[in-house]
Length: 112
Length: 112
Image (cartoon, rainbow over all chains, first blue to last red; front, side, top):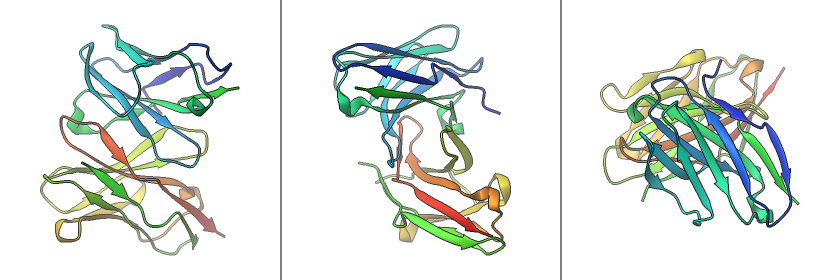
């Protein structure tokens, strides 16, 4: 049973729109990472937050942004959606990055 | 830069047979290595991790993996596969202060 909850589970947006995806982590999980998983691919790292500060970023443009809140929740925002943004977006959190991450079930985003 | 190669896109084994999934990594320093499993439409579940010490690591669900530095490999094994093991398996490499890089995954089919 996962301790990471993501919402919504599915979402359909139009190209050019903006979207906010949400993640609720377990208490004490100070590190949260977001991943994009295209169909048939492994997850690709978007960025990581540690104690509400961005702590690392993958090869994604600035229109992908995030926030982490003191209550162990976080958001992924994507502006100016493109068709290629269609993917499963995964949130993963950890109390200590060395312990491995707990993943949520993801948000399936479809851009039309 | 870190990278992970999973040479086998799809593997089919009979129920009760043994299983080995291959993973090769590229990283200059001592890596943290992970195996995750993903069922359709779900997030990723951590099977096992290697940080240091004993190169044979035991995980959940009867899985184990062996770290071989000389071969830059971290292969996943299970002595007897169950039908419920059918899923997508991902190998990942990371460090204490970095994100994880995932392989493209190996899809496991279990024949009755």
